[in-house]
Image 1: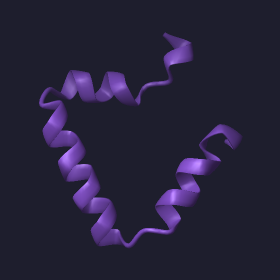
Image 2 (image 1 turned 180 degrees about the horizontal axis):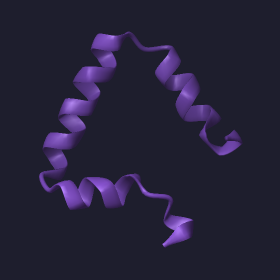
Image 3 (image 1 turned 90 degrees about the vertical axis):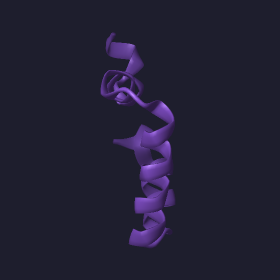
Image 4 (image 1 turned 90 degrees about the horizontal axis):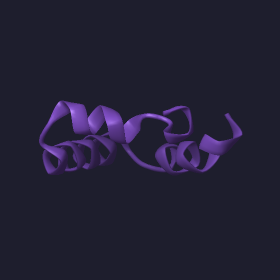
Amino acid sequence: MNKYKNVVTKLESKSLEEIIIFLRSYSSKLGKKEEHCRDLMDKEKI
């Protein structure tokens, strides 16, 4: 869990509205669900 500490800290400092806006803009840039899932996967396990 330590390698995600920075991400958790950033998310905790944002409001729910800011997180939703970020996720919407992020997912709209990716387009395909497969690309989105691949991007979120741990690249070390691939």
